[in-house]
Image (cartoon, rainbow, N blue to C red; front, side):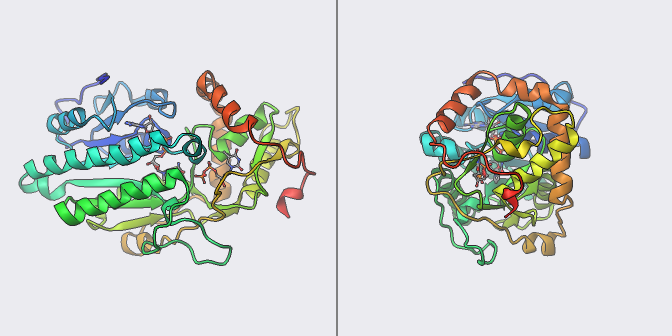
Length: 383
Ligand code: NAD
Ligand code: TYD
């Protein structure tokens, strides 16, 4: 166990903290920054710091008395129990996961361990902590499990979007491990009356996303004049959600959501991958006018498809919108512009996270994909 407590919660702050897992990852760090900027409550961040966790994301709050960082594993039952006992959080917000589908195909073990065993460990610890609570502390305690729309499987072009009652049909090792964790949460509510709530969201994008995922990968590669690898025919559809809209949804569900319920969170922005890449390239053409790789779309390269690639995801967020009055505020166009601008302004962050082991991943995932059709003509992407 590696335990590294850098900043203690200020004794003067009497608001009960929240315990966040995976807070040094993409969504988690956006959530922690947003939480500390918009609320007075302290945060304990438990993160193992895998390749996807980056404490630099939280450098701006590292010295805050409201922020405590603990490097450790959610599978470490003793550590989790100790943190709950010591800090007595009013909620656990569970982000920690192995999150990349391609990595789950090449090495599923870590996904089963963290996503299933890790969630089980947290649920057990939360259950025994909850059993020790009385009065107001017990009434307000929540366990919020952050999950994905990928548990619902894949949609055909004309299928209605995923809603909370859509049967689970996970297709990738990642999706199966998240589905398993969702089932555990459901069972802990039903059997042990743990006051848990689940959110299942669509593809997030925004600042601090590790450049193994589609949007930051395309930005990082285009800026260096590298190929933009589009899997298969590029017509797979995702429903893009700006990460800060997601963070706001989680806060809303935490404060107002009903125990035992699932809330789907989506951006209402269905786009094919080729449309996404086309828009990223157009933004880079505009924002980096003197780039020697302009027009960036010429860098697109069709490569071998992902095995078992889900064709379409789409979220029906009407429950969250109707019941809790949440709305996605960012359109895909405004959110993507902000995202590209962030990556342009944070070239040092990208350089830092893409050094070292990242290069091995790029070789492992991309070199083995036979190149299909090579560079396509500009504009072909919008057909
Ligand atoms: P991420 O991969 O960027 O970050 C995951 C974080 O969890 C990292 O900081 C990592 O160090 C930490 N972690 C991994 N294993 C751990 C362990 N055993 N113990 C402690 N910490 C560990 O992931 P993300 O994109 O921020 O996703 C966060 C959550 O949201 C995940 O549960 C994911 O399944 C879910 N989700 C993500 C998306 C998306 O588009 N990114 C969409 C739907 C759902
Ligand atoms: P990704 O960002 O990995 O998220 P997810 O698989 O969870 O949806 O991928 C988004 C889409 O982009 C998905 O259909 C796969 C595709 N994709 C590519 O075409 N090329 C790439 O290099 C990557 C990483 C993804």
